View (tube, rainbow, N blue to C red):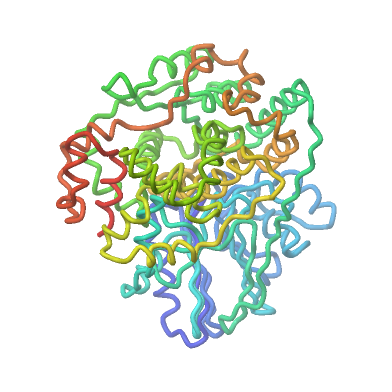
Length: 586
C-alpha cells in the first residue's frame, strides 16, 4: 500500500522539485521508502511513497521498471491473485526478480495492456508510463477502494492519491463552486467532484490514457457489470457464502508485515476473526471500547477474542482523548467528511500496536442488507408516489427534523431516495445556511450524475445499489483510506473481494434481501462459528458517543457557533452530525 503522484507538463522547468513536493506531502501514507522517475526532456515525472507489505526488500521499490526499461509503474494497492497471474505470465516467458505483487501488475500490463485490469482481484490505483509511446495510463479498481485524483489543463496533467498533494504543488486552488451544497446534503463530497475546482476522482473500474502533450487520448471502463442469477436455494447460498468468504479472507491474509483484524464486536468483524484464526496463529485483534456503557461492545469483543484465543488489545476512548486529537483528525481528512473519526482512532492504535495491515468488515452491510434503510425502503417508496404538495403537508404536521428530508422526493432520482434516508440537511435548510436560493441548491444537486439502477430491480436491490455506490464508496471507503494511511496502515476489505462479490451477486435477490432479517444469509453461514450473543442481537453500528462528547466542544466555525442549530443541539434536540458538518464548512 502506498501513495502515488505524477506530472505531465512539456514546458515544465521544475519537474524534480515539484514531484518531490507532491510525493512528500503524502509521506504519512508511505513511510517505508520513496522514489521518483523524471524525464525532463519529455516533461514526465512520477513519484511514489512506499508502505511495505509484500517483499519488504528493495526489489519491491517503486517506481518500478521492466527489464528493458520501457515501462515505469507506480502502484498503490494489493493484488490478491498475484500468485496465479505470475504463473500465467511465467508460462508466457516472463522472468521475475522479486516476490512483490507490483512486478506482477507491471508484466500483466505489458502482456495484456488495459485488458489486464479486469483480471485483477485487487484494490488499486496505478499509473504506468510507456517511454516509447509517451502514453501514461491511469487505472482504479472496480469498487473504488483506493483513491485516484487528477487535474487536466491545457499545459499539464497532474494526478495523486490525495488532494493535499495538489495543494502542496499549488497553494491557489479554488474551491469547487458547489462543494458546500454537496457536503451539507450528503456529509461528504460525491465523486467525481472534490472540494477543489477542476480536480476529479477517476471513476472506479475505469482507466484513462494521457499523451506527452498532457491530453487525454482514451478513457473507458474495464468493468462490465453483469448479473447472472444462478443460486436460488438457501442451502446452496449459505454454502457458497461460507466457502467464498473463507477463500477471500485467506487471500487477503498474505503479507510479509504484521497483520491483524479490527474486532468491533459486531457480526462482520467477528466472522472475519473466526475465519482468519484458522489460517493465522496467533491472530492479532484490536478493539475500541467506551466509558459510556451504551456504546461499548467490549463484552462481545472479548467473547470472540476468547473463543479464538487471539492476541487481543482493547483501547478505551474518552471525550478528553477525542478533544486532544481533534486537530489531527481534521488534518487527516484531506477533504471534509461527516465520518471517519472511528477509523482514525482504530488505525492510530493499530499502528501503535505495530501492525501494518488489518482486515475490516466494511462492505457486508451493503451486500447483505444490514442497514436500517433496507427496512425503510418500502415506506420511502410509498411516500415517493404521493403528490409533492401532500409531502409538504406531512412535513408541516410532523415537526421532527428527520421529516424535512422528505423534500428530496420532489424529483424521482436515485440520489434523492438516498438522501431521504441518509441526508444531513434538507434543501431549504441548505439554502438558509448558505444564504442562497432553494433553486440554486436544487440546480447544484441536479448536476450530480445519478447511479445506474436496473429498472427491473426490486426495491431492496435498488437500495443496496444506492448504499454500495453512494454511501460506501464516497463515505466509508474514502474515510477508511485517508484515516488509515494517515497512520501508515493498510485496511483490507475481504467482503469486497472480487470473487466473493461475484458469488453474492449470483444469489437470487429475493433470497438475499429480507427487510426484517438483515444479513440473514451471512449469519446463517457462520452462526455456528461466532457466539450467539454476537449475532442474536439488534444491529449496533461502530459509532462513538458524539452526542455527549460534543456538548462540551468549542466550535470554531461561526456558522456552527451562532446558528440556531447550535442552540437546538445544546438542548439535545438535534443530531450531532449536523453540527459536525457545520463546523467543517470553513
